[in-house]
Image 1 (cartoon, one colour):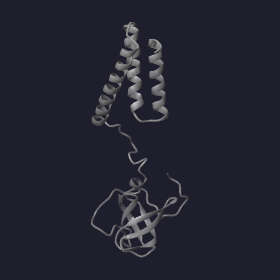
Image 2 (cartoon, helix red, strand yellow):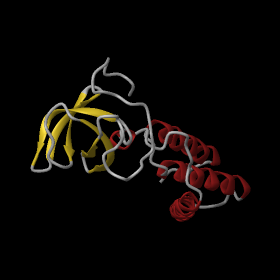
Image 3 (spheres, one colour):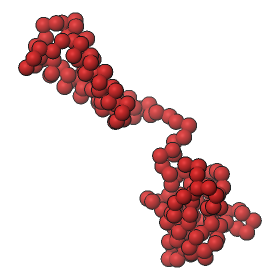
Image 4 (tube, one colour):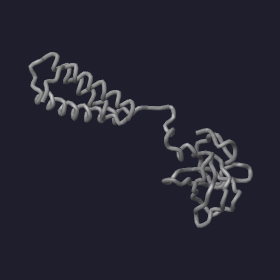
Amino acid sequence: MPDLDYWHWLALGLALMILEILAPSTYFLWMGVAAMGVGVLLWLIPTLSPDVQLILFALLSILAIVLGRRYLKRHPIETDRPTLNVRGAQAIGRTLTLDSPIVNGVGRVHMDDTLWRVLGPDLPAGTRVEVIGVEGTALRVRPLGRDGSSGGGETSPHHDHDDGGGDGGGD
C-alpha cells in the first residue's frame, strides 16, 4: 500500500463533502469529516502507518455518522416549507371539484396537472370537496355545503383554494 500523506486525507475529505452536495445523504459529510480528522492526525503524528490510518478512518467515520445522526434526530432541520416534497400534504385544505363520482368510497379529481384518486363518502361528479388528509397516494375528502363551508364539523387549515382548473402550475 502506498504511503498516504496528510494532504491525501484532506483531499479525500473535501471530495466526500463535495459528493455530499451532489448526492445528499448525510453519510458522505460525516465520512468527509472523518477523513479530514485523519489528515489532521497524520499532520500532527506523521509516523502513523497506512493500516492505522485506515482503521482510524473507519472508526472516525462510524463515530461521526452515529453522533451526526443522533444530533440531527434531536435537532431536526427546520424549514418554512415542510411539505415541499410531500405533494399530497400540500393539498390539505384545498377545495376541488370531483371529476368522477365517488362510488364505494373512491373517486377522481384533477388537482393542478394531475388526476388524483380521492377517498370519501359517495358523491356525484361535479361536487365541490375539501381535502382533509392524505392516505398513501390518495386524498381524503369531504363534501362542501352549498355556501362553501365544510359539510362536517371538523376544521382544517385553510390554504389557497383551487377548483381543479387553471394553469396547472404552482408546484
